[in-house]
Image (tube, rainbow, N blue to C red):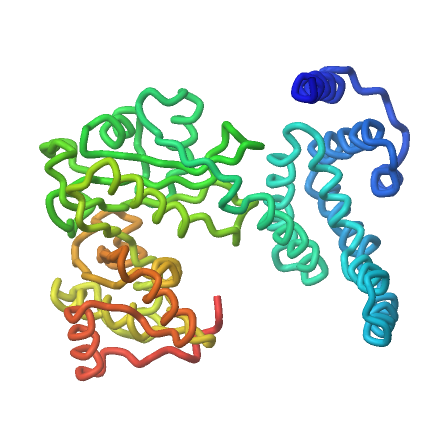
Length: 425
């Protein structure tokens, strides 16, 4: 009876909140926000939340920016109350004083966002709301704390325990496949035939993380090629006339494209869990797979070469490999992290820089970002934890002997200095 009651309650709430016509509410947005935060009735509170979300969606950019400034300013913490409750807790560390302190340090806007999320479908709307916040107020210091509140809540709502890994194949719903085409951020999917070549052959796989509150929206997806060896060119990997192999003959799984799909979830990391989960699943399905690598872009390479005044446009392939290895090993931010964002991601996940390749991506984007070079990051499942710990604690970069030799050759030739003076990204 409890299960039936919960089911009937859910059906009622969804019908009441999503199908019943809205009644006009003449209160201002600020009044609705105050009413929602102070509401004690669950159904009435959700009705107010529905009005707020609908009005926000209908706003122009100026209206949305004003909405964000209201949350950032009028719903912020009160520093004096925080100091007073902290003093009280230090004097008498009890359950009551701790509760008072925790209430003081959490701004009302966090509770507002939680209550807005009670509406069916609201999670996706809130993700888009943060996307608008980043787009409109990314450089506005007054809005940065508000973004931290969104991020704090999203980290909890989108933790690995809630995510569902689903394979994407040619039988997946058309609206999901359309989004894979639209969200592909590394190697553009030109059309449906191009997508078919990435999904249908036996030596191709695609996986995506979904959240139960956003079942039709992939959060992140990875495209995988099953190969005999480690590839050094995306042209060969995606060639129209390539000869597929059976999955059972593959010895290597190549993660050649990882795309984040939701700009409103920027800074919420899914890639680490995605790669490791896919590697584990593929190992179970295909025991013959022994090697897990990426074929990754080096998006900051040409920008760094230009900043260092290092000529590269007419450089031979060997020299490009030397420059790429030196950049990945030695170009650093002020905080000691690698300058290249893709390197930070994979090294932070415990991967090793395995090999670099010249003329590996001859697309306009590949030439502009990395002079056509690409890199393999190796995921040795027996060493990823050890590599991650060393990188996290000492910034030690795991790299093959070949990469270290290329980096040493670059330093010997004085091809570029370490760039610790570069501003943090």
